[in-house]
Image (tube, rainbow, N blue to C red):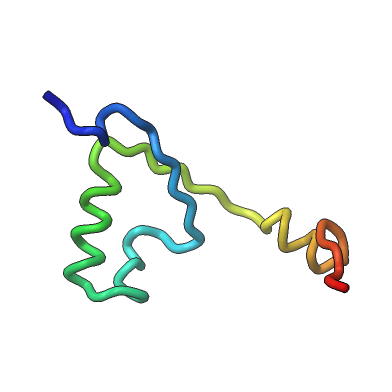
Length: 66
């Protein structure tokens, strides 16, 4: 019988490719993390500028704190 990870579809978003996870965590933990994340995974890579970043740079999409 499959575990709970076989019943749900989590979405994980990162601006770092899985091969670069060892830049912010120890290599052995990064390897284990990527192994578990990529098991039965679909990797979707995108390119181009971030819409949220463009809006923030143009002063749109955010409200100033009072």
